[in-house]
Structure formats: C-alpha cells, structure tokens
Image (cartoon, rainbow, N blue to C red; front, side, top):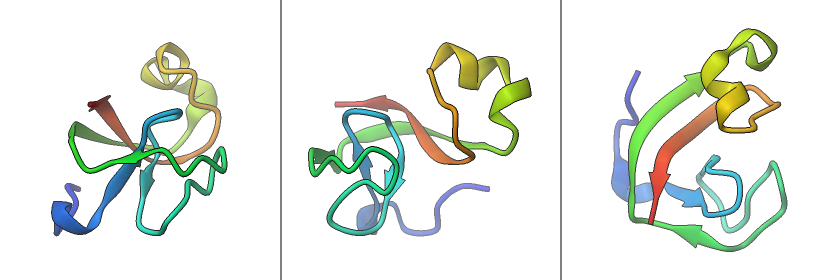
Length: 67
C-alpha cells in the first residue's frame, strides 16, 4: 500500500524509515528528507531478504532511496 500523501511524509536519511513527525522514531535522528523514492513495508524483518540487505531490524514503512 503506497502512502496517500507523499508531501506530508519525510524519510530519515540514516535508517530510511518513513517519518510523519520531526524526528525518526527508530534511530532518533532529525536528519530527514522530503526527496525520496520507492516505498516498502517490512512486516517480518527476520525473514525478509530486503530487510537484511537494508539492515532493517524493525517492522515499518521504509524508503528504498533517500536523497
């Protein structure tokens, strides 16, 4: 399921987590970007090859590319 309004979402440049607030819930960073592409939702990071390649260990919404 793609985000409904990409303009309101930002992505953490550190961990690629999709963020709606002022800081990342996952790593605590405030280094956020509005310029991102590719949307994925990780449900089970322990059994996901994509999550392993992206070093994701928590379920959630992530961007594939962050500029």
